[in-house]
Image (cartoon, rainbow, N blue to C red; front, side, top):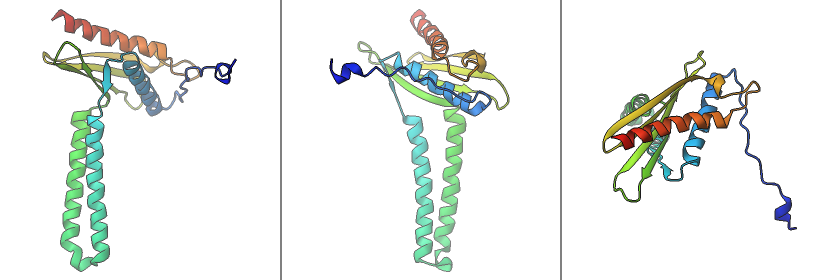
Length: 193
């Protein structure tokens, strides 16, 4: 036997979460949905367009702030007044655009995947988004598909306790069952039309 054979394959890592922390539960469930959606379907490739847009807006805002700081350092306040005014206005405009982007475009979307079929020139965009109110146990999962025919979505509302055991461990198989149910219903709608 070789040393490679002696090493046991690492078991699937169990995700344990403080089940009384709603934000941690939501993020752990989001990660489980993302793992299931992308891990079980090799034809789906993750797209980072939403995250990259947010990153570019934040980088521009930080760049404006750094420019203002550097200009004020080299040219003390009375001389730097117009540059500081421009920088403050540009920073707040960029933060406004970022807020609009995260509120109206992202809407809780945590994964975007592109499906390109070999024989078909069109592609389908799959988006998974979720919502969980602050003091509520209802986890609302929405799976949406956009293709040449339009946009269709399926929503599931279940208690987060349906996916977490008493010790706070995420039950990946139950999450996978729910994601597969939503995915298959959207795929069946797609074939029926």
